[in-house]
Image (cartoon, rainbow, N blue to C red; front, side, top):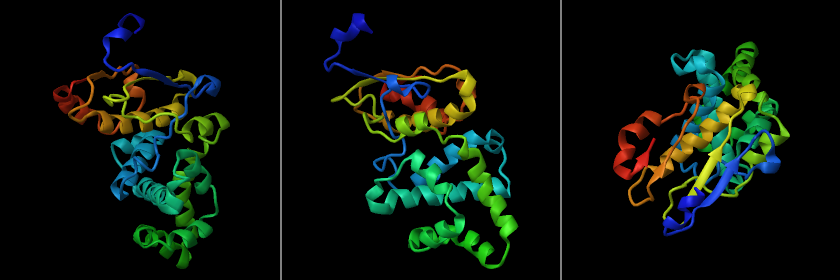
Length: 238
């Protein structure tokens, strides 16, 4: 890197993400409102989160895993549209999910574009199917509770840099580290970063760039197959 810095028309900046020790980390919010441009985007983020916290559902989903994904999707879209998305981040999602679901349902049903998705949950509550409903909500709450930590919250709620690393005007070198001792936790957050980044870098007119992924099978990255199939024409090497 040091030997080749002078060969670039624009000097690239170096950023790094370190969940294990945030003193040596930049901050980046992969769920920033600029990335959640519509309900399809919020559904995609929910899909990435749930398939990483429960890898078994990457192959086959059951009633409770699908319910959990829909619930997460509703919460993400609420955070995106509430007060301009100022609270749209993974840490805020986890905290909102910890609220009593009766209160959350009352809030979500006030938004027309969320009310349709949340209606099956509200109907179950009104019909007294609390056991079924609690199972649906718990399918999302329990696996996401493990992400509640000051280190993750700090890194994932900031906005030090965007994820379009091959922007011609602002090229970046980004290093995101994993830790095998916390693979179940860090894998999901890594998937949020990489999945979002892959969408942004695979466009014409960007700088040539490379993506190096070590221990790839430890995370589920949505869109990786499409990136490998199409990215060469946009000068992206995987």
